[in-house]
Length: 104
Image (cartoon, rainbow, N blue to C red; front, top):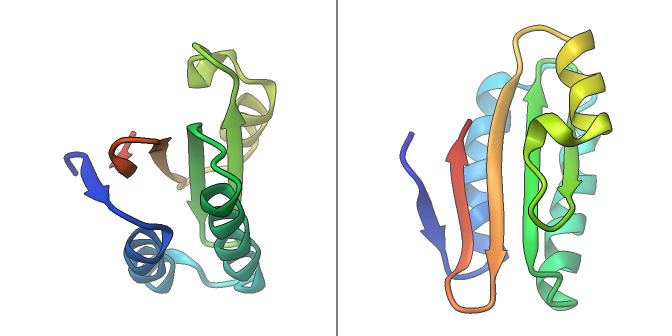
């Protein structure tokens, strides 16, 4: 999947909703938490980099520090080292572009 730009959280969440319907089997309420978090990110102008992790039993949002690669984040490493069959997406929220998402 190449990077896709979404002007608002709503556009991003529509894509995420399609992905979670395809992959999420258990703990579907996790996605409601994610929706609220991405609206919060947008409303509070929390520009930065995030990783959205989707698996059959839940979702996770990892916040990356400035200039931090995913493999340098302890939370992301714990997730990737303990579960299989993950779908991971880099999400950037930019003042100028909005939300940018791509599969990693």
